[in-house]
Length: 185
Image 1 (cartoon, one colour):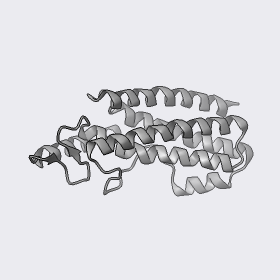
Image 2: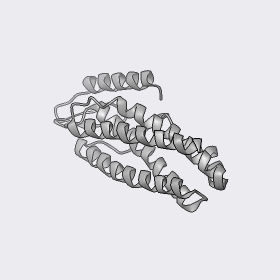
Image 3: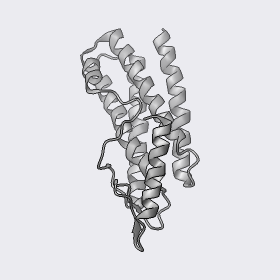
Image 4: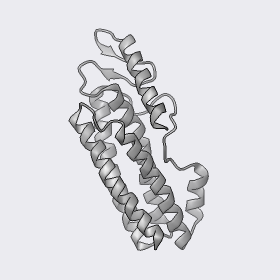
C-alpha cells in the first residue's frame, strides 16, 4: 500500500470514528473498533491489524526456509526473523485486545511487500542458491513494506506503538542491508 493511500485510509477511518461516536464506544464501520478511553488511536489499531498478517507471512517464510534448501546463513536469518516477529505479533494482539478491536479487518487491504501465492509456491519448489536468492529478494521487499508501514505510526502518541514502530524500522533496515550483502556474495 502506498504511503498516500495508507494516509488517506487513516484520515477516512478517523472521520468515520468521529462521526460514529457514542457514549460507550467509538467505531467506524470498517472494523477498526476503538473503545472509548483506549490508549490506541485508529491509526494504531489499523497498523496492528495490518502488521499482524504481514508479520505472519514472514514467520511462514521462516518455516519454508526451515523445510527447504536454505543455506546456513539464510536459515539462521529466517529463524531470527520468525522469532522476533512472533513476539511482535503477540504484542500487537494484546494491543488490539486492550483497544477492544478485532484482529482482522472485515476487508482486505493490500500491503506492500507481501508475497503472492505464486511467489510462495516458486520459493517452496526452489533449491540451493536459487532458494536463497528468491528468499532474500522476497524478504527484502517484505521488510521494505513493513518499514513503510511502521514509518506511518512511529510518531504515535502511544509509547508502545511508537517504540515497536521504531524497532521495526531499525531492525528490518539492518536486516535488509545484511540480505543485500548476502545477495552480493
